[in-house]
Every structure is written in structure tokens, then in C-alpha cells.
Length: 416
Ligand SMILES: NC(=O)c1ccc[n+]([C@@H]2O[C@H](COP(=O)([O-])OP(=O)(O)OC[C@H]3O[C@@H](n4cnc5c(N)ncnc54)[C@H](O)[C@@H]3O)[C@@H](O)[C@H]2O)c1
Image (cartoon, rainbow, N blue to C red):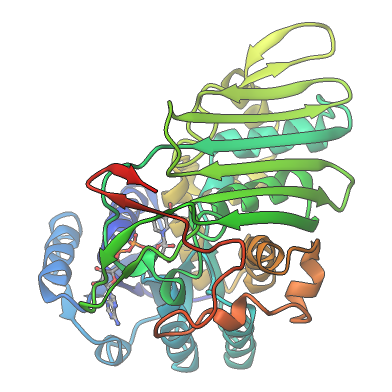
């Protein structure tokens, strides 16, 4: 038990770093555990300075600003919150762990299984916590859905899950680390879709196999952040059949460049009931309008079950799942990490669990590349690595036979 004030730092003050700073503020308002964010780091000094000023506003104490992680690790911190582009997780997380610092890192754990395993190895070797900051499963909605399916058996045997995300993004893609396979690791399945895959694993258990097709239908030309001309290397179309270990079948599809109205839908159907959200956002406010269809013919909003679910939790489970009464998912993951650092306690999503979700994400791409059904276990054990071998810095040396460039976009208009 660490009884002193816990010293934390945050690295990566971009989009999600700013969200984490708001979450730490929410934790500071309610927790009895003394902690301070003593330093922040971003390669862009201005962003780090802005983040430091924000923390100093609610914390009422000075925050050190760094632009290099090596300087940050010299600050004698207990825990580090890593909000960096995905390809940088491995190097910086391993450096922090080996310096004796506990780490919480944003999803995905890494861009390859080999990198994720090196991180797990370092955590074990150093005897430090490695926690995945995956927030969606920590929402009251996803926790309630899990309770309805696993504990109440309200849907009977879950047989079929569908998720579709169609969004026409005609605007020119933003350059940045996401557009490169070497830094983002891929598109939907490892970025936004990773949230859904983790949440569904939470509700339905692990995925056994993935049969996917993926391609880039429109070739979005862009200048990458290093000044090189290229294309957005992510898929703009992905479709997959998933089989869960428990036998549930999943159908997933995601299209980002095809015209037409946006279409988000989610449905989980069991032998006795279903949960359907047709039109709600699948990400960032998971299943806000979901309806539950029960065996007796009743139809209710999923959110109507939040209270009965929360009321039925033991005080111990409540404190674990919603520490300090927090329900905002980013604050929940931060609070859990803080308690784990203080008490040396296990975390909900440890390196093993994070690796399994990463293997599920990568199975989409391994399958799309090899045009074969891929077992998640084979990705996890590195028996299937063809796609991951293409994830390296520099120009793409190999592309998918099926994922090749077919059409070019220009000024929002499509050209053959
Ligand atoms: N949980 C979620 O909902 C969610 C949402 C978005 C992103 N993410 C994850 O968070 C991570 C960051 O994504 P983002 O959208 O915030 O990216 P971002 O590009 O907005 O921010 C990344 C920041 O890291 C800084 N940076 C880059 N290299 C650095 C280095 N060597 N040292 C210090 N700083 C460096 C950049 O200057 C930038 O400010 C990714 O792993 C992503 O998958 C999670």
C-alpha cells in the first residue's frame, strides 16, 4: 500500500490526452486517495503547456512540462498515463515499466502482437501494473448489458450479433499518424472498432475466429505528416463473420467512403430476447437508444435497467466497477488505475486481456490479407503474422491483392 501522495504523469496531450485530463479532474473531485499529476509531456511544447495549465487550474499546484519522455521519467513518478499514437506505445511503455513506473495505456495496446508481448513481458519483469485504458465496457450501458445477458439470462442464449457502421466521409482525410498503417496498425478494426470488439468480448466472451474481407475502394490522396505524398493506407471497407467461443455468430461491416445516408446499427439477438439499437452511435456513447425485447413481449429502453443493475450490486462490486461512485467511463478507468497503484491491486483489463482484444482486431486484417478464416488463438500465438509483417515504417511494400487502390477521390467527387 502506497500511503503517500501518488505522483502521476501524462504523456500525449492530443485528443484523448485532453479527455483524460478532464477525467483526472473528475477523479480529483471525489476521491479520498491523495494524488497529483506532477508532469505532462508532449512532443509539441504548446500542447504540453496547455495541458499543464489545465491541470494546474483544478489541482492548484504547478505541473512540470516536458517534450521528451526521457525527461518525464526522471520526474520520480509512480504512474504514467499514456495517450500517444499507437505505434509509440511499445517503446515508451517499456521504458516506463523498466524505470519502475506503473502504466495505463490507451487502446490498442500496440500495433502488433509481438510488440504487445514485449510490453507484457516488461510489466511482469518489473513487477509493475500495465492497464489498458479501454473505456466503453466501463459505461453503465455495457455493464448493464453484460448483466442482462450473463447474469439475468434475459436474452436466453445469445445467437446472433450484428454491428454496422456506414458513414460517408467525403471530405479529404486528415493527415496524421492514423492514416499510416505503420503508425495506426490499420483502420476500423484496430481503432474505433476495437472498442466494440472489447465490449462484445466483455458481454459474450472471446471470439474464436474471424473471416473478413477488407479493401480500399476509393484512393484518398494525401500528404503525410512527414511531407511525403501518399494515400490513406487504411481500409475504407471491412466486412466480417465472427464466431465466438460460446457459439454466437457475429456479422460486422464498416464502410467509410460509399455514398448514401449514414447508417449505424447494432443488434444482439438471443433465443428469448434481443437488444437493438438501430440508428444510435456505436462509439463514444455506446448504444444510447438501445431497446430490450423481452420474452414476455415487453419492450423497454436498455437504460431503464441501469438502476436495477446498480441496486443489485454488492458494495464491493460497486466500488470495483464504479470507483468512488463515478460513472463516466474515462473517469472510471483513471480511478481504477489510481487505486491499483495505491493498493497494488489487479486491474480489469490487464496485458493478457488487452492482447486478446488486439489479436481479435488483427485477425480481421490477417484474414482479409490471406483470404482465409483466421483463429484468434493463432494470431495470439503468432502462428499467423502475414499482415503484421507489413506494419513497418516506410512506404508500403506489399498491399492486399483485394485491398488494392481502385478509385481516386478528388475534391470530394469520385473519379473512376
Ligand atoms: N478511448 C478512446 O475513445 C480513444 C479515442 C481516441 C484515441 N484513442 C487512442 O489514444 C491514443 C492517442 O490518440 P489521439 O487521438 O489522442 O492522438 P493525437 O494525435 O490527437 O494525440 C497524440 C499526441 O501525442 C504527441 N506525441 C507524438 N509523439 C510523441 C512523442 N514521441 N513524445 C511525446 N508526445 C508525442 C502528439 O504531439 C499529440 O499531441 C491512440 O492510441 C488512440 O488509439 C482512444
